[in-house]
Image (tube, helix red, strand yellow):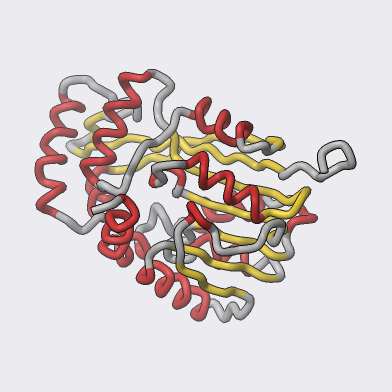
Length: 262
């Protein structure tokens, strides 16, 4: 099975859990992306890997027009239902892969994506596509969870994530994340970082696969009991396995063409 098929299979499985998870549907988290949009870029906005439409809905309340884009039909159906529930009529829905966005160059005022970068085998290519479809002077707002800067800690954390969800490729250290954005030819205007507490059973339950989670639960508990924080502040607290996801949000601009760069 290739990676795109694996990702589609996993998010078909996760559509219900992801759409109802308190951690992923938290409006305050979605608003971070929307509030970061520069005022001159709230016209036509693309939400890449929109999932069940949590960020899409918040965008549609602000922007003139939103395109919700995702690889998985089940996720798009959840997004469409969510937008309909909120009476939003300025959203279009499109299925496809972020590695080849089916949109014209310079088409969007802003391109946003949340919790997607760690699922891409070639995040550099995806960022290049996001840059291509943004207009000159347009904004890219990217938010994702990041891993430890220590290579051994990062490896352990990513291994745990892959065992839970094989569509996971790699959470990048923040420094590498920022490097990819800069290498894409984007000008960073804002960086924000925060930690979000998670509890193992809540996080694990989203993937809806107890056969997979049972051995992972044993492994993570053993790591925590042995004092291994796995790069994510993993600890046992009152019998629960708790950790944090460290988020990074980047606001960047596609440079405006000049006579020298045209």
